[in-house]
Length: 254
Image (cartoon, rainbow, N blue to C red):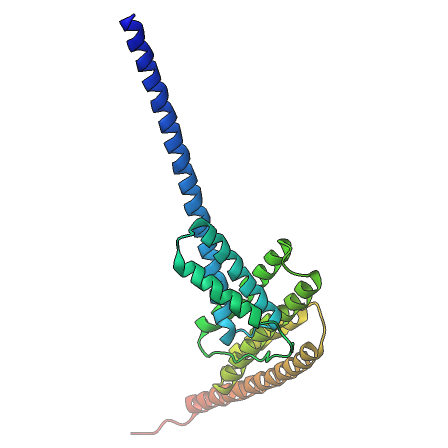
């Protein structure tokens, strides 16, 4: 009887140990999932905040600004649910919700001009920022957070903005190379600008005007290069003739 009782107790202890271990493993999995979800939300939050702060370099329309604020609110709410005791997150959420409520646009006009930086890294950062905005725009539309017409108009605006930055930067480099007498490099920059304009699917006033200007500049550069080649040949012939004259000239007697 005692042996049976001992066996039963041992089996019970084993079962309890298995159950406790299973519970601990389940809690560990939940904690790992929570950490992974929290990290994902934090990355999205930081991405949205960075894009919003980048408005000094890339002009944001009221619709894009509102979209980013909504995205920030969504991430903060989800993070507060995972970490309800985090007072800083709740405070940031309240601030963002107040900012969002105050951002209801009454006027859709805004400054869409861009100042190109001289630094290539800053220029690359601007283009990457626009590409990220377009990705976020499509992602929010896929989640049902944006109207289709808004997505179409904003994506088109960002596309032409990206084109302008690319074209204007190439033209700026071409003008600088030409002023330094580097006609070959200047021609390459203007050709890249023309390729970007030609590949753009929509013709508008900007594209049409810039295409005409770039083509005219390329023709002018081609004329300069041709004239330079003529001058180089003339100089070479003059030098060759001088060398021949020197060769057959009478030698002085010593």
